[in-house]
Amino acid sequence: MIEFNTISPSVSSSLSPIVTKIQKQERITNQEALTLYNTASLSLLGTLANDIRERLHADKTYFNKNIHIEPTNICVFDCKFCAYSRKLSKKEEAWEYSVDEMIQILLDHEDQEITEVHIVGGVHPKMGLDYFVSLISEVKKVRPNIHVKAFTAVELEYMCRKAKVSYKEGLQILKDAGQGSLPGGGAEIFDKVVRKQICEDKCTSEQWLEMHETAHSIGMPSNATILYGHIESPENIIDHLSRLRDLQDKTNGFNAFIPLKYRNGNNQMSDIKEGSVINDLKMFAFSRIYLDNFPHLKAYWPMIGKKTSINLLAFGVNDIDGTIHDTTKIYSMAGAEDQNPTMNCEEIVSLISSVGRKAVERDTLYNILKEY
Ligand code: V47
Ligand code: SF4
Image (cartoon, rainbow, N blue to C red; front, side, top):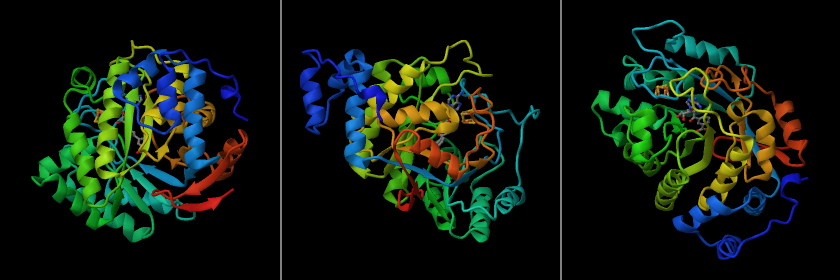
């Protein structure tokens, strides 16, 4: 079944104690992580990551039935990798939905068994906390049982700043309106120097981490991401994962870690070549090994592609996101392979089964809804 990992990987003497620690389920240090990242073969990383995945989840591979709503792509920020945002002053290819229009999107999917709505978009200067509270309240009126996973820390930081409320107050207001959790976007790379080069003007790494810590403190779980495969170094990757591992030790509020592969279409960094599939396998396997306190590792298939997502099931991944009815444009505009990201339940189940894994439908909080 796991073709990639069947070769017995050779282990050098410098790696041997690190491998032993991982196999004994002991935490590796950042220095050990760097040695592992720089010197381990892909087959060794894959074998170690797959062992962890199978210890935690056996053959289970989770997906959910979700819908994405992107309220707007107008954004006050200027991330150099973003192919999707438009300025308020330059409205070609821009959209800004009213609450009614977004509710209509949900009503159009009334007959579908969707358990989650994922709401993220650009940071529109005129869409504030009140606007999003009314959106969430209306969503809950038409679909009371749906889980609302909404707003990156970037959107939330701007929302709270504009409304002059603390993160805790802002998040509590959204929670009271019906928001259940936060997605993991906006993390990019926490290192200050790289962050300045790729997304200088949006929330800082410290603000991103504080927003998630605050959400966890009031009972809102979240996900975390990394944007990899551009100008970051192995040290930057380990620094990023280290800050997440530390926060998870403190709060235990993260559900899934989602490495996001940099796509180079139509942005200000288009001269940077996209990484190889080998690099994708390495990034996911390494994340599974390093983040010993994260329960789930997710491959977001609309971005990384269906084929790679399935190959990643042998490299630590145990979740491939959802059926995604509709309209997410963030990756198609950046040149992702799948320009029309939708897969129905049968397709997801047969994709997972094709590599011998067991498809399991979950809700946002990883409660099992159906095993296939
Ligand atoms: O923060 C933007 C990324 C993120 C590009 O929590 C790009 O379940 C690659 O975070 N190449 C938003 N990536 C999406 C996101 C997400 C997606 C799916 C599930 C969840 C979850 C979260 O998209 C941004 C940014 O890192 N992004 N442009 C690009 N050119
Ligand atoms: Fe705005 Fe998000 Fe694009 Fe950055 S990645 S420009 S915050 S929409």
